[in-house]
Length: 110
Length: 115
Image (cartoon, rainbow over all chains, first blue to last red; front, side, top):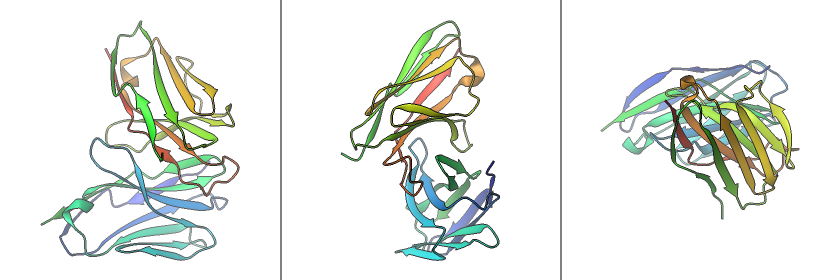
């Protein structure tokens, strides 16, 4: 089955800096890669996603890149703000299953 | 209405109790999911319902019994749970189980404590 690895597990940045989170997946049949943000005590919420036929997608301060050959994808957050502090999960979707990475706790210090 | 609702928000139950978790969505989604999330861990898939039929059971113990009475409702019946079953139980839904590109919308979860 699919296995998703995520790094780093924790990431601390100064407000205004960029943050990068990286994930690798194992199953080449996976074709959809969403990123979820989960604030403490709240539900996971989709922040950006990318399909396997696209190499990069951007939405304001957030961008995702996908390298299908290497089976890895990354989340880039620019101009970080304290409200970006949360746990971020990458995921890979293969048919009905959403398989999450282990999560990255991002802390943005003012 | 783009929301998945879950009740109750919190539940404390003994190991001999029987209880049920409820999930509801009115977005017309035809795929519904149960996940279990332990502290500082990612959500872990338990069950998938596709057009009101159970399509995936991730080898979940029989003390967890899912039910999908109709296309808007999803229940999780709990019986004879163990303390290690204490976790946040998340429900999710997506538009079309035949298409993996659809976003999964998560409910706020039920925080379950088994004593």
